[in-house]
Image (cartoon, rainbow, N blue to C red; front, side, top):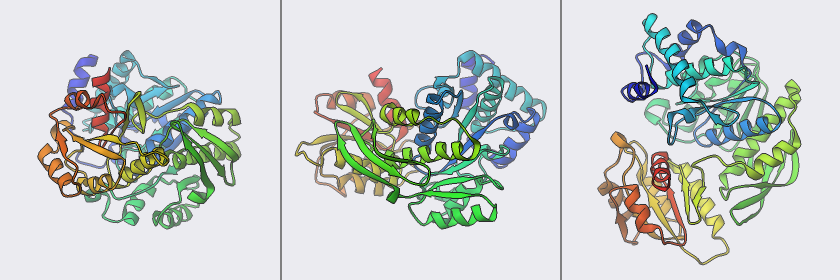
Length: 423
């Protein structure tokens, strides 16, 4: 297939298959010659923050002089965002080549793959062929049954903060979801995790059962010193890294935890595997690196944040409040959400933020969209502010463009829509 044909094919490919992702991917990797066995993999799972942690780990390794492969999801604008080497998206030609290899292998062996599996197989082939030094691998949905969990012998497993999401699939409590996420832990493989809620005991128990060294990054290890001018100064003190003042190139308070996890992972690699992680790379990465769609400043007055569950929205609100802590100024909110999210609780949290004096909503997410009438009605249950309703992100951005500041959140689909408007 040509690249355009591949995109059309993927659009019609189901998200789920008849078997679990780990079963399908295990068979696929075997048929492809187990390219993952040649790779040094850092495997990351979690509910919120895993994309950011992946991105920071990748950037620190890259700035330390290593050739890195990064596999993340979802994409915002182009499917090629999911597979990167040294920060560069896989080319159309390379994606076409490796996708076709996966497609032909699966078809010849009557292996029915789901949407995510094609990307995963292509990424493993691409990273192996290009002989990257490290692969930073983000799970899709869950952990134990995820396609990425078919990889053999990762160097390190990482679990970011865990909250309630996809409860119909992963379980309806933090502990049940933690069991699924911690399913990526392999025998004897070290684990770094966000030690910030009741998921910790589950992760520690599973790590202990696998004879895996386990290290938690807790809120007591990092402290925000100052939040100013779109940056955050913070300190990090733990067993693997001590620095009294690091600068984070974002106003997103939640990224302090994520970058602290990433730094700890990189220093653990240095400690256990003698990786040449440079202190200058850590300082440079925290001070300059931005992960797209996470409190990302697209224009002088428009921030986008892909928070799409209650915990993510609370973290977003905390960041907004931090930016306006010493100001009486107000901002506008643009919100949209897809239908399978807990939008009522998300909206309730947003309406508790006193920074927003103007609220606008729109629709996003294609077939997963939530009708704007439902979103509007939910806001009316939680605020007296008049809710403006727009049919598209483009209409909303045009209406809000003269506001001093606009924050857009609720869905990564909305982030993608706004990026397209501003291109």
